[in-house]
Image (cartoon, rainbow, N blue to C red; front, side, top):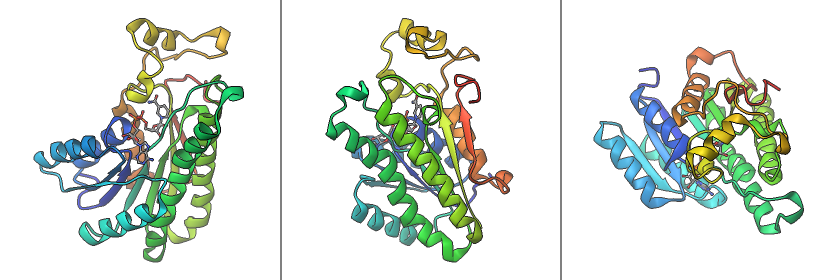
Length: 258
Ligand SMILES: NC(=O)c1ccc[n+]([C@@H]2O[C@H](COP(=O)([O-])OP(=O)(O)OC[C@H]3O[C@@H](n4cnc5c(N)ncnc54)[C@H](O)[C@@H]3O)[C@@H](O)[C@H]2O)c1
């Protein structure tokens, strides 16, 4: 029960990796604040966790909206208490060639994947800093360091969110706040399933595709969301108390540790 009584705020918690982090944190005794734009899926997630005994507050928040973010963070502190951990898991993926990328796709990608991380960190870290404690974990991507075809906007946004989180870690170290990044590779969620619709496609991801300059996955499996949640939990825990500004890649070796 490593997070017993701790207040943990997770964005993108209605499904996928954010939901897996919420489940793992609930098992460790955390009080949960869950943010997502998908209100109905979020409500289902909240009900499932609460029926297992967790204290959970779900709020429909779009992380691109500063006013909504600030109000929701304030509400979490009023209703659950001081936020100990922030996990930024909300994200979107718009696929397509860099040459065909529309302004809208570029701007939405950066608004959610970078702007959302910035807005959430600003709102939460301004409260953590005077208290002299807190942990932030941002979920980026292994595409933040290794180029991928048809993912230029996404990969660039993930590089920006990862580096923003590291810079924040430098600024906040004086306040005893740690900021780290978890960079997943292919992980079995709705986002990943945009890329493969059959068992054959899934196997192709594992095998890699030389014509796209994409290596396969040396550990020969697509990650479960729980694999990513484990890394987030570790970095958020006291076991990682001397780790900050680190990017932990959880991709079965797909980027060869580069
Ligand atoms: N699945 C993968 O293979 C993979 C790989 C690398 C990185 N990631 C990253 O992991 C994170 C979680 O992805 P996932 O695979 O669980 O995807 P997902 O699409 O299953 O879940 C993302 C969640 O974020 C929410 N969200 C999107 N825009 C939002 C906004 N503006 N405000 C609030 N919530 C918003 C969605 O509603 C959804 O519930 C993302 O940041 C993603 O980029 C995923």
